[in-house]
Structure formats: structure tokens, C-alpha cells
Image 1 (spheres, helix red, strand yellow):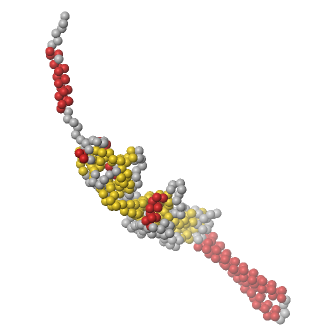
Image 2: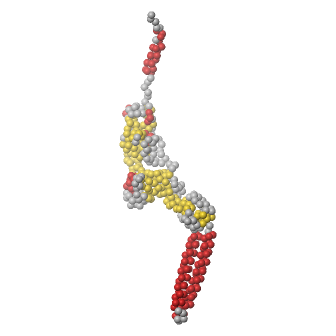
Image 3: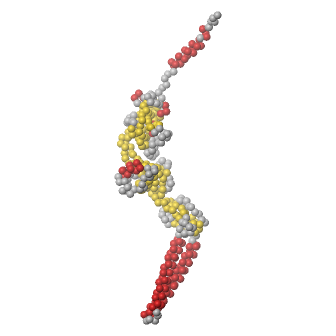
Length: 394
């Protein structure tokens, strides 16, 4: 017996299929993703050599105790500028004053002995001519006078040494400079068996920056200077100094020292540049970035740094071509100039590269491009930065 199925049973199924078809017809294709693009900039840019360094005084002086004794007082303010011959420490001088008095008395005694022997010689001279005394007596008197004179000279030397030792109880600054913290305090015994370090003084005007730079950069700078080592570290392109807060020292510096050899292990060479520091802003031990312009790169192509992607050491950019279609382009980057990156190959002037929305696009995809300036924000220093390491976030 057949069961009759009501037409109403199929009505929901028909509606469902009809709804699916309607939905398929209603879903429009996704719009092209919106990205921001910047035009490739072409202009002349400077080529720099640069390095990271540390500031240090142009002269570093260790102040040490030269005599043994107890520190009576510390006579300077730690971390302050001191003048030449300013008293820094006072060592108990009483033992040295007593020794000086003793040596003066010894000198007086030897001088008296010399005077007595001299009188004997003077008295014997006429007598020897008359054969009133023996020649031996006269020669003995002369020898005693010479011996007494030698004792006087020795006593004078001891006296001079005692005066010098007494003067060393006042420890003074040998040069103008910035004094560091004290290593000893009142009541400390210094100078026993060795010259105890008391403090250090750094001459900071001009201040030096010691740095190392790769052999390749050194060769480029030496060619710019034009004479390798013949200039004795003088001359060449001026150096700029960028401090830890990103500001640049107004006055340029000059190279004053290049080490005699390249480090075979690191392939770098050590150098120092001097910068005026009359205001005392820079102190030893500060971070500093130095650079020198060695050439001009004519007609260089630049793109914003954020437009460059790196994958396993391969650099690429997304170029928006005709019809707003994306093309991935392999490029060769060089120096960084502020927020821009010099591109040696892979791009042409006037092309547009994606700077925002890189994660949304792929090759041959159409996009909706909005052009923005290539240099939205200038670096406060314009410092040329090195290439990032593989995997470094942009």
C-alpha cells in the first residue's frame, strides 16, 4: 500500500535550495585591499662610514700616593672639574716634618765637620812649606776635608729628598680636568709597599671617542683622506658625533689616531676622533655614534625602510604596477639615510612601493592604492644605520 506524501513536505526543501542559490548570487566579490604606497625617491645622497664608540678623556691620569702615610683629608669634590696644582688629598705630614728636621741637623753637623777640616788644611799649608810638619799629616788633613765635603753633599741630598717627601703629603692635580670618585678616605693608610691609587683625572676638552670600524670602511676613509697613514692620523673628512639621546654635537670633530694594525680576528681597526667639549656636556664612558662623509652617491634611489621585507637574507618590496597589480621585486639595499633606504638594484625612479598593508597583499593581486609621502618623518639625526640582521623586525 503506497503512502501519499503531501506536497507541503517538499516546500521547506525547495525554499532551502532556493535560498542557497539566492545567497550565492547575492555575495559580491571582495573588494581589493587598501594599501598605502610611496613613490621611489631619486636624489643625491651622502655616503658615510660610521661606527659605535665610547667617549674618553684625551688624557687619562691616575693619581697615586707617592709616600706612605695616613690620609688626613680629601680636599676636592668628587666628579668636579679641578685645576692644575689644586690640592686633592692631604697626607699626615708630621713624620716627614720630623725627618726633615733630623736631616737639617745632620747637614749642619756635617757642615761643621767640613769647616773644621778646612781650617786644618789652611793651618797646615804654610807649615808644610817650612817643613814644620810632615807631608803625611798635610795629606791626611786634605783627605779629611774632601771626605767632610762628600758628607755635606750626601746630607744635602738627604735633605732634598726629605723636602720632596714632605711636599708629596699634599697630593695635587697635575693638569686641569674632571676628577673621578675617590678610592680612599680620611684615615686610610696609603703608599705602604706600593703607590696606592687615589683617584683619576680625565681631560675632557677636547674629548675623544674611541671606536673600531671595519677594514672596508677604513679603506674608504683612507682614500678620501688621500694618503693612508702619511698624515699621522690628522686631516681627512670631518666626523659627526651623535649622542645616546639622538642629538648631534654641533661642532664637527677630527680623526686624531688610527691604530697601527687591523685586528685579524674581527677585521676591524681602532681609531679615535676628537671633539670640542668646552661646555663639559660629554664625559668619559658615554655611548657615541660617529660618522664621516666620504662620498656623494649621485641619483640614488630611496624607499621608506618599512617598505622593505627580508626573508632569510633576501630583501624584497611590493611594487604597484599598471592596473594596480602587485609585483614582488627582489632588491639590493645599501645605506640607510634617515627613514629611507638606498636601493642599489631592483627598482626604477617613479615606481610605487607598498609601505603599509604588506601583510594583506601578494604577487599579482589587485589593490586599492593610496599614495603617501615617502618621507613622513625625518630622523632627528639623519644617521645612517646598518642593515638589519636576518629576521630583524622592520
